Length: 61
Image (cartoon, rainbow, N blue to C red; front, side):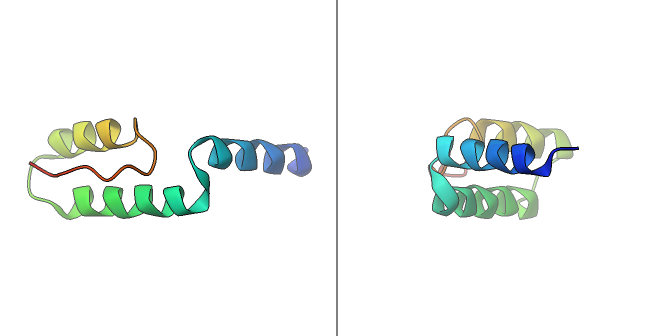
């Protein structure tokens, strides 16, 4: 396995999504969704929608 190539791909994806700060915001948003009330399928749908816009905070209904 070529770890250097894997590392470059990971960096490219993080940069495309807005950098590390955006990644932190996405993680926080997903954490908030996971802790919210509702069924697992509702949470999964919210998480999928949240990841469509990198780093953009969404208002929870």
